[in-house]
Image (cartoon, rainbow, N blue to C red; front, side):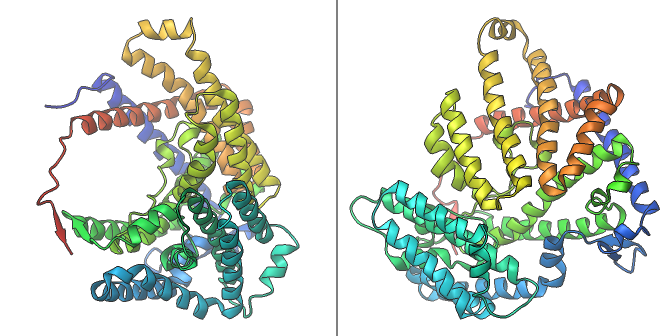
Length: 509
């Protein structure tokens, strides 16, 4: 028996048609801007010859994507494949010591890739924060961890540490800051979890085995120590029914997405166009809205694929890693907005939830968000753009609570109580549509530039009012309604789904 929709079915069909038409319309504007301006001087560095089959140039503005899936693809595949083979052999031979095998292989790979001076630097961070962890004082662990993190994010300390790494290659900066940054965050997780261990302390080898797990070492995601330690030391290694099939399917899906994105970059130069402000000022309001939205969608796709590849390897190692972030299209509240679920889980566990509690007290929530975004600012690297991004996202998260509190009191709560479910959903979606574009504008500045974000904001809110403003909000409203209906039906399915018996449903690998 089907689940009845909260809204009439014809209304959902209408929303789908409007949303699809608007996306095609905005995409056509971006395609036209990409095709007509491919020869601009500003495009010279970031638009290069693409696949021969298409006969078009390709947007290569994102170094991280090109690094992962083009220039250094073979190196990354070689390292991860070696880890999978090495881990599988020794898991079969000595399952009780597989966490040690993970750490040894990862440590050797880091040593060969970055040299002994980088390894010495990483070990010094581990030793310092391990020594602090033995005190079992959370405030001291946080202070030492944040001070160590600041040493690789602020001048002149970061430059001095970077000079310790010998050699020079294209990935050196990324691997240096990724390796050091994630190491410090993992060491802080270790120290904070050690504070919770009352009877004894974790060993230094536990920290090293946790930190040098190669798939997570340079690029994340962060898996908190308690989860990793429990899973990596689990000797009862089983696979759920069809788990290997799901792993294979996800791997093929990631490969398909990589190909689709590369094809996409041949026709829509969504990363290069926003960097040319002389061109951007001449584009239509719909084109600007499409560029802002597509940049966030692409950033989500990149995070989902990159973390997805790493998570596939981790799943083969019988780990349950942090999942990819929620799609930007599905977001309409700041509380669910993040692009790195590992960092998000870390911050929620040790800062946001620890301070904010149930997140229903205004002042506790304000303190929790300020502390969370202060640490996030340090993690991203303090600068004007990060300060602005942190301020607006912190404000957005608190503003949602303020509005929710306001509407929980009469007469608003009384009015909503007498409304039908469908009408209440429509009214909420109107506010959520505006909130969605606040999320887009607050985050697009960190992906492109402050100038581009300001231009999009002026055109959609002021210069484009009322036609562009209301039409974009109308399309967004349709999208929010579809997302909410999908979430509602999924929640109902989850409630109706029977609990499957465990016996006979798992098999040993």
